[in-house]
Image 1 (spheres, helix red, strand yellow):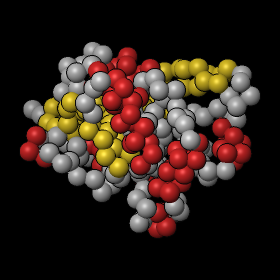
Image 2: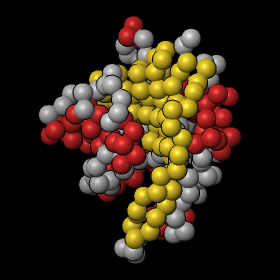
Image 3: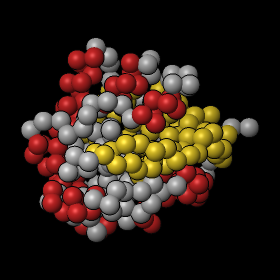
Amino acid sequence: MTEPQQAVSQDSASNEGVPDTVAAWEERYAGTGEAIWSGNPNESLVAVVRGLTPGRVLDVGCGEGADVTWLAEQGWDATGIDLSQTAIDRAGEIAEAKGVSVKLEVADITTWSDPEPRRGGFDLVLGCFLHTRLPDTREELVGRLAEYVAPGGRILLISHAEMPDWAENHDDELGHGLGHHHEPVTPNGDFALLIGGSPARWEIELGELRTREVEGPDGKPSEIDDSVLLAHMVTD
Protein backbone atom coordinates (compact mmCIF):
# COMPACT_ATOMS: atom_id res chain seq x y z
CA MET A 1 0.00 0.00 0.00
CA THR A 2 1.28 3.42 -0.84
CA GLU A 3 1.34 6.13 1.79
CA PRO A 4 -1.29 8.86 1.48
CA GLN A 5 0.74 12.06 1.40
CA GLN A 6 -0.06 15.70 2.08
CA ALA A 7 0.86 18.13 -0.69
CA VAL A 8 1.75 21.04 1.56
CA SER A 9 5.30 22.31 1.93
CA GLN A 10 6.75 22.85 5.38
CA ASP A 11 7.16 26.57 4.75
CA SER A 12 3.55 27.07 3.70
CA ALA A 13 1.95 24.64 6.13
CA SER A 14 0.93 27.30 8.63
CA ASN A 15 -0.87 29.18 5.88
CA GLU A 16 -2.82 26.09 4.84
CA GLY A 17 -4.09 25.07 8.27
CA VAL A 18 -1.90 21.96 8.32
CA PRO A 19 0.91 22.75 10.77
CA ASP A 20 4.18 20.82 10.55
CA THR A 21 2.98 18.49 7.81
CA VAL A 22 6.43 17.47 6.63
CA ALA A 23 7.60 16.97 10.19
CA ALA A 24 4.50 14.93 11.01
CA TRP A 25 5.06 12.52 8.14
CA GLU A 26 8.73 12.17 8.96
CA GLU A 27 7.87 11.52 12.58
CA ARG A 28 5.40 8.83 11.59
CA TYR A 29 7.95 6.99 9.47
CA ALA A 30 10.98 7.51 11.70
CA GLY A 31 9.05 6.90 14.91
CA THR A 32 8.23 3.29 14.07
CA GLY A 33 11.80 2.09 13.61
CA GLU A 34 10.52 -0.27 10.92
CA ALA A 35 8.44 -0.25 7.75
CA ILE A 36 4.82 0.74 8.26
CA TRP A 37 3.50 -0.69 4.97
CA SER A 38 3.44 -4.21 3.61
CA GLY A 39 6.07 -3.68 0.92
CA ASN A 40 3.66 -4.98 -1.73
CA PRO A 41 2.63 -2.81 -4.70
CA ASN A 42 -0.89 -1.43 -4.80
CA GLU A 43 -3.22 -4.00 -6.39
CA SER A 44 -5.04 -1.43 -8.51
CA LEU A 45 -1.75 -0.04 -9.77
CA VAL A 46 -0.60 -3.49 -10.82
CA ALA A 47 -3.88 -4.24 -12.59
CA VAL A 48 -3.89 -0.98 -14.53
CA VAL A 49 -0.21 -0.58 -15.38
CA ARG A 50 0.43 -4.12 -16.58
CA GLY A 51 -1.30 -3.25 -19.84
CA LEU A 52 0.82 -0.14 -20.50
CA THR A 53 4.08 0.20 -22.42
CA PRO A 54 6.87 1.15 -20.00
CA GLY A 55 8.38 4.62 -20.24
CA ARG A 56 9.23 7.35 -17.75
CA VAL A 57 7.11 7.28 -14.59
CA LEU A 58 6.89 9.66 -11.63
CA ASP A 59 5.47 8.32 -8.36
CA VAL A 60 4.44 11.28 -6.22
CA GLY A 61 4.30 10.45 -2.51
CA CYS A 62 6.11 7.16 -3.09
CA GLY A 63 6.36 6.34 0.62
CA GLU A 64 8.58 3.36 1.31
CA GLY A 65 8.87 2.57 -2.37
CA ALA A 66 6.80 -0.55 -3.02
CA ASP A 67 5.04 0.90 -6.08
CA VAL A 68 8.00 2.71 -7.63
CA THR A 69 10.21 -0.36 -7.18
CA TRP A 70 7.60 -2.61 -8.78
CA LEU A 71 7.36 -0.20 -11.71
CA ALA A 72 11.13 -0.34 -12.16
CA GLU A 73 10.95 -4.14 -12.13
CA GLN A 74 8.47 -3.93 -15.02
CA GLY A 75 10.93 -1.92 -17.09
CA TRP A 76 9.82 1.62 -16.27
CA ASP A 77 12.36 4.42 -15.92
CA ALA A 78 11.13 5.19 -12.42
CA THR A 79 11.37 8.30 -10.24
CA GLY A 80 9.84 8.58 -6.78
CA ILE A 81 9.51 11.60 -4.51
CA ASP A 82 8.26 11.85 -0.95
CA LEU A 83 8.19 14.34 1.89
CA SER A 84 9.90 11.98 4.34
CA GLN A 85 13.64 11.30 4.35
CA THR A 86 13.08 8.06 6.26
CA ALA A 87 10.56 6.87 3.67
CA ILE A 88 12.97 7.65 0.84
CA ASP A 89 15.80 5.85 2.66
CA ARG A 90 13.62 2.75 3.01
CA ALA A 91 12.57 2.99 -0.64
CA GLY A 92 16.22 3.02 -1.63
CA GLU A 93 16.87 -0.07 0.45
CA ILE A 94 13.97 -1.90 -1.18
CA ALA A 95 15.13 -0.98 -4.69
CA GLU A 96 18.67 -2.09 -3.91
CA ALA A 97 17.44 -5.39 -2.47
CA LYS A 98 15.38 -5.97 -5.63
CA GLY A 99 18.34 -5.09 -7.84
CA VAL A 100 16.62 -2.29 -9.74
CA SER A 101 17.55 1.31 -10.43
CA VAL A 102 15.14 3.94 -9.10
CA LYS A 103 15.65 7.70 -8.85
CA LEU A 104 14.52 8.86 -5.40
CA GLU A 105 14.35 12.33 -3.90
CA VAL A 106 13.00 14.00 -0.79
CA ALA A 107 10.73 16.64 -2.27
CA ASP A 108 7.32 18.34 -2.20
CA ILE A 109 5.44 18.19 -5.50
CA THR A 110 4.32 21.80 -5.03
CA THR A 111 7.93 23.00 -5.39
CA TRP A 112 9.73 20.11 -7.10
CA SER A 113 11.24 20.40 -10.58
CA ASP A 114 12.07 17.54 -12.93
CA PRO A 115 15.89 17.26 -12.91
CA GLU A 116 15.76 16.07 -16.54
CA PRO A 117 13.33 18.50 -18.22
CA ARG A 118 14.98 17.93 -21.59
CA ARG A 119 13.34 14.51 -21.66
CA GLY A 120 9.94 16.13 -22.05
CA GLY A 121 7.96 14.99 -19.07
CA PHE A 122 6.75 11.63 -17.82
CA ASP A 123 4.75 9.03 -19.73
CA LEU A 124 2.92 8.21 -16.50
CA VAL A 125 2.43 10.27 -13.34
CA LEU A 126 1.12 8.35 -10.35
CA GLY A 127 -0.67 9.79 -7.33
CA CYS A 128 -1.57 6.92 -5.02
CA PHE A 129 -3.64 7.96 -1.97
CA LEU A 130 -2.38 11.49 -2.49
CA HIS A 131 -5.02 13.29 -0.46
CA THR A 132 -5.06 16.89 0.70
CA ARG A 133 -6.23 17.94 4.12
CA LEU A 134 -8.54 20.61 2.67
CA PRO A 135 -10.90 19.50 -0.14
CA ASP A 136 -10.64 22.78 -2.02
CA THR A 137 -6.90 22.31 -2.50
CA ARG A 138 -7.21 19.00 -4.35
CA GLU A 139 -7.79 20.59 -7.77
CA GLU A 140 -4.52 22.50 -7.39
CA LEU A 141 -2.75 19.27 -6.44
CA VAL A 142 -4.16 17.30 -9.37
CA GLY A 143 -3.29 20.15 -11.72
CA ARG A 144 0.26 20.16 -10.40
CA LEU A 145 0.66 16.45 -11.11
CA ALA A 146 -0.68 17.01 -14.61
CA GLU A 147 2.11 19.51 -15.32
CA TYR A 148 4.62 16.66 -15.31
CA VAL A 149 2.79 14.51 -17.86
CA ALA A 150 4.42 14.35 -21.29
CA PRO A 151 2.26 15.08 -24.37
CA GLY A 152 0.18 11.95 -24.95
CA GLY A 153 1.08 10.64 -21.49
CA ARG A 154 -1.13 9.48 -18.66
CA ILE A 155 -2.04 10.32 -15.09
CA LEU A 156 -3.17 7.62 -12.66
CA LEU A 157 -4.94 8.63 -9.45
CA ILE A 158 -5.78 5.96 -6.88
CA SER A 159 -7.64 7.46 -3.94
CA HIS A 160 -9.79 6.63 -0.95
CA ALA A 161 -13.42 6.63 -2.06
CA GLU A 162 -14.36 6.01 1.55
CA MET A 163 -12.71 5.35 4.86
CA PRO A 164 -13.57 2.49 7.23
CA ASP A 165 -15.62 3.39 10.29
CA TRP A 166 -12.67 2.87 12.63
CA ALA A 167 -10.22 5.08 10.72
CA GLU A 168 -10.84 8.42 12.46
CA ASN A 169 -10.71 7.01 15.99
CA HIS A 170 -7.66 4.94 15.11
CA ASP A 171 -5.96 8.08 13.79
CA ASP A 172 -6.61 9.87 17.09
CA GLU A 173 -5.20 6.94 19.03
CA LEU A 174 -2.01 7.01 16.97
CA GLY A 175 -1.60 10.66 17.85
CA HIS A 176 0.02 11.69 14.57
CA GLY A 177 -2.75 14.14 13.64
CA LEU A 178 -2.76 13.24 9.96
CA GLY A 179 -6.51 13.30 9.67
CA HIS A 180 -7.68 10.18 7.84
CA HIS A 181 -11.19 11.68 7.62
CA HIS A 182 -10.79 12.81 3.99
CA GLU A 183 -13.61 13.90 1.76
CA PRO A 184 -14.83 11.02 -0.45
CA VAL A 185 -13.20 10.85 -3.90
CA THR A 186 -14.77 9.48 -7.09
CA PRO A 187 -13.22 8.91 -10.53
CA ASN A 188 -15.57 11.45 -12.15
CA GLY A 189 -14.86 13.92 -9.38
CA ASP A 190 -11.11 13.59 -9.86
CA PHE A 191 -11.51 13.92 -13.62
CA ALA A 192 -13.46 17.15 -13.12
CA LEU A 193 -10.60 18.44 -10.97
CA LEU A 194 -8.09 17.36 -13.62
CA ILE A 195 -9.74 19.27 -16.44
CA GLY A 196 -10.31 22.20 -14.11
CA GLY A 197 -6.72 22.33 -12.91
CA SER A 198 -4.91 21.61 -16.18
CA PRO A 199 -5.04 23.56 -19.45
CA ALA A 200 -4.39 20.38 -21.45
CA ARG A 201 -7.14 18.23 -22.97
CA TRP A 202 -7.78 14.93 -21.23
CA GLU A 203 -9.78 11.78 -21.87
CA ILE A 204 -10.69 9.05 -19.40
CA GLU A 205 -9.28 5.62 -20.17
CA LEU A 206 -10.47 4.02 -16.95
CA GLY A 207 -12.67 5.30 -14.16
CA GLU A 208 -14.01 2.91 -11.56
CA LEU A 209 -14.33 1.99 -7.91
CA ARG A 210 -12.34 -1.04 -6.78
CA THR A 211 -13.08 -2.90 -3.58
CA ARG A 212 -10.22 -4.17 -1.47
CA GLU A 213 -9.90 -5.93 1.85
CA VAL A 214 -8.35 -4.17 4.82
CA GLU A 215 -7.66 -5.16 8.39
CA GLY A 216 -8.83 -2.96 11.23
CA PRO A 217 -6.83 -2.22 14.39
CA ASP A 218 -8.75 -5.03 16.11
CA GLY A 219 -7.56 -7.50 13.50
CA LYS A 220 -10.98 -7.92 11.94
CA PRO A 221 -11.24 -7.85 8.12
CA SER A 222 -13.24 -5.18 6.35
CA GLU A 223 -13.79 -3.90 2.81
CA ILE A 224 -13.45 -0.39 1.43
CA ASP A 225 -13.67 1.14 -2.04
CA ASP A 226 -10.86 2.96 -3.83
CA SER A 227 -11.36 5.43 -6.66
CA VAL A 228 -9.21 4.62 -9.71
CA LEU A 229 -8.81 7.14 -12.53
CA LEU A 230 -6.55 6.67 -15.55
CA ALA A 231 -6.62 9.55 -18.03
CA HIS A 232 -4.44 10.44 -21.00
CA MET A 233 -3.50 13.78 -22.47
CA VAL A 234 -5.00 14.41 -25.92
CA THR A 235 -2.51 15.84 -28.40
CA ASP A 236 -4.51 16.09 -31.66
